[in-house]
Image (cartoon, rainbow, N blue to C red):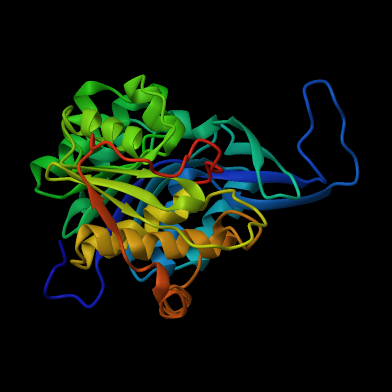
Length: 339
C-alpha cells in the first residue's frame, strides 16, 4: 500500500469524535445499583478519533473527516486531535448539534460499560465526505467504523474503492453494517461479539472464529481479522486462518484497545507489512494500551510499540490452520472483548 515517494504512509480516517466522561470504580454496577468510590475524568474519545490518534502515534500521516459541535467539548476534541498530529482540516463543526458524548464506567479489573450519545456524529453526511475529496488524494488506506450514519460510511468506502484505496472497516456497532458496504471492504476487523452478530455463529473457539471469518469473507472482504482480546487475533486470508497470539499484560483499562489495534493495523498495512506482521504490530499497540487509562491517552508511540515487540519476541510466532479443521484449541469465549 505504501507510496514509495513518502517516508510515512497517509491514513485517512472517517468517523466519530466524542468526549469520554469516565468513572473508575471498584467494580461495574449491576442494574439498579449505585457503586461509590469512583474517580471521574473527562478525555477525548470516539472510535474514529481514537483510531486517528492511534495511527498518528504509530507512525502515520493521518487525515480525519468528522463532525463535532461548536461547544467546549468540540474544542477539546479538536485540541486533542491536533495535539497528536492529526490533520483536522476536514473536521466540520455544527452549531445545531452537540459534540458526541460517551459515558464510561471502568471496573478495577479493566472491563468497562459504555453508553453513547452520538450528537454531531449523526450529522456527518455523504456530502461532507464529498466536500472532503482532497483528503483522499494520495491516501494509502481508509479506516472506517460505524459510529456515523451507515450511508456516510458506504459512500466513503465506495469512493475509496473507486480510487484503488484499500478500505479497512471496524464494524462497530455491528448492527449498522450492510451487505453493500461489505462488498467495498478490503479488510474487516470485528471482535468476537461483532463477528458473532454478523454471522449468527457462536464464537467459542479458534475453530469457530475461523468459520465466522470465512463466512464474512464470502460477503466481500478480501481478509478478515477477528480480534480475541488477550488471546490475540484470528486472521483469515486466501482460504486459510492463522492465529496470532496476544500478549500477557495486566489490564488497567480496556477502553479503546480495539481502536488502538485498528489504528496501528492501518499503519502497518500501509507501510507494506504482510498481513500477519501488521497484526502482530497492532496486537502490541493494543496490549500496551490496556495497561494505561483513557482512550486516546492510552495510544502508544511508534517507539514504544517497537520496543515492546523487541521485548516480547516469544509471541512472534503464529499458528496457521484450515478454518474448519478438527482440533482442540483453547476456549476464547471468556476472553475480555477489549479488541
